[in-house]
Image (cartoon, rainbow, N blue to C red; front, side, top):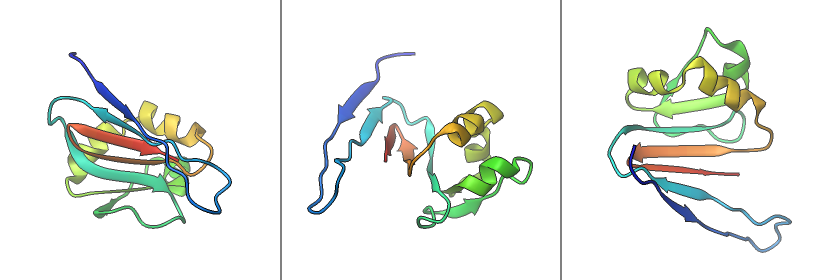
Amino acid sequence: MGDVGIWLFSVSYTGEEDDRAPVAFDLGAGALPSFEVQRRGVLNAAGERIDFPDDREFARRWHVGGEDKLAVRRLFSLPVRRLFTQLTGHWKVVAAGRWLLTGR
């Protein structure tokens, strides 16, 4: 599968109680379609909205956006959607090509 570069960041804002710790993964190959996923109700994810009508729990909690709907739907298989439905907090995942960025 090859090496994966991992970049860790620490971000803090004046007046915020928590520090943020986004993590970027350099997958080394342009394998990911561009997409963004985040909790519903925060702000709309970038790109065209991608629905998952067969998974009400996931659709109720998460907003997915991206340009290549078919490719993004393939990534969000049932096991991946189950992982997201178990998360708490305001997670956000952004991907494009060789990069995947995640954080709260």
